[in-house]
Amino acid sequence: MDTSRPVYLDHAATTPVDPQVIARMQACLGQAGVFANPASVSHAPGRAAAREVEWARQQLAALTRADPRELVWTSGATEAINLAVLGGARFLAGQGRHVVTTAIEHRATLDACRALEAEGFDVSRVDCGDDGCVSPAALAAALRSDTVLVSVMHVNNETGAIQDIHGITEVCQDAGVALHVDAAQSLGKLPIDLSSLPVAMMSFSAHKLYGPKGIGALFLRRRPRARVAPLMFGGGHERGLRPGTLATHQIVGMGEAARIAMQEVDREQAHLAELTERLWRGLESRVGGVSVNGDPARRVPGIINLHVAGIDGEALVAGVPDVAFALGSACTSASTEPSHVLRAMGHDEQHIRASLRFSPGRFTTLTEIDHAVDVLVAEICRLRQLSPLWPQHGQQACSE
Amino acid sequence: MSEYYPESHPVWRLFRETPGAGVLAAAPDVYVSEACSPADGAVLRLSVRVGDGLLQQVRFKAFGCPACIACGAWLASQLEGRGTDALVGVSAMTMAEALQLPPARRHCAVLAEEVARELYARLAG
Image (cartoon, rainbow over all chains, first blue to last red; front, side, top):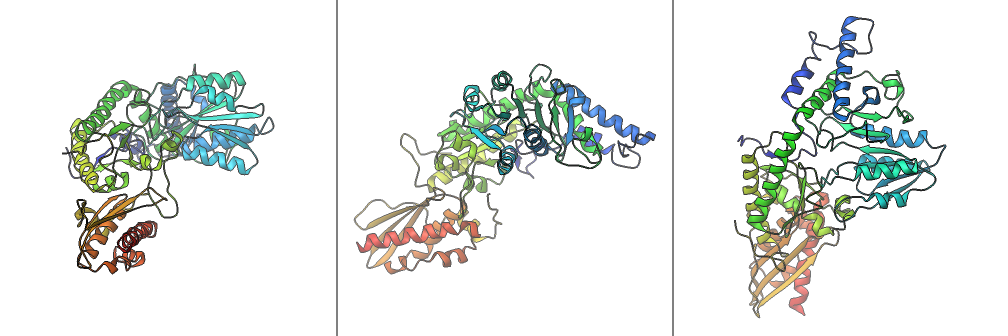
């Protein structure tokens, strides 16, 4: 184990770029590489770059079982979501001005919906249950005759909760409403078959999948055709939906990441399940009072959100510099910023403050997890000894 | 967002070393007060042993961010051995300056001032 750097358990935030992806990207950068403008198809270097771009599109299409012509490159999932939500609602505004989303979406969706409200749209936000999942029935109840768009995430980025996309798709199909799915956290982790799942739009990111930051894609169904109004103008690239010179190296990086994910998905998910289980069980058996936020059986293996009773997450993350993981909230004088997801699940301030997200990755080892458990146990015990809230009723003082 | 404190920062030193951490066993000469920050749920508890008009022993417990724990430790180390009037002399502003608290963490010093004044009221009452 390399002890010179922290054990990185924050892959839900971003992943390192796979060495095979780096190699493929590097081949697109230098003078000897495929550096030309993919739109310059009048000469051979330009055509070579265009072939690379289309090769990458085919890889992503294969991973999601889409038609390559249904994929539009963007700068990332945030832009893809904005194009779907803002562009989709604006294009359909003549048919209605009501949009439905959920209370647990990523800020990209929530903020895009706020922007729509400023334009005069109505937005309904459907709550989740205490398991972190939105029921299709609750979503159906929010639909109106003037609803034109529904936007729902596939996997929640904080809890890893898997939403019932098939059920939600049925609801939207029955109502004849376009559905956009934010698949930033599920691409390459769960099977996605767009040839049989009738969603209108789906957003993807490369950097959650061992690809580079700064590249993503939006799936726009051809039949029945999903339409969006473009957000940017200037050049007609990507069928006029996303202008700007295509970043061949980024696109090829995402394509290579998709190709590797197709090969590795089963083995990788089994590996991640073993790592998160070992982390949870290791902490629970040694300090007690550790529980999973959400339904442990309905989450992606790579994300686990744990509540550690009696500690403040911010103190724990500061006290364990050897491990990189994420918090649900942080304290500030102006306002607390507790996780809107954990809050929607019904948790109170102190519960949210004691909640932590761990997301190991493809290259994380069992040895690293064991080391993380050791240092976390030591700091949890120290913080509990300092805490006036510990031991709580029914809990024992912990020992290392 | 979580703050980063370099090792030389007073908050970091007090958070790691926590001088004065603990609780005094209940006794006639031991007084306890507790304050909670409604903004973020942080809790600070102070217990003191009083004799001859002096705060002979001062201990703290804290649930909160590193700055909150550091404020508890600073309070305990500043008050021990001083007269009980020192409790009303506790100033959030002085504490914030001494600990170089970032603006977003100054409410932790306010919490510490509040728990000290609450304790003084108990002693006086």
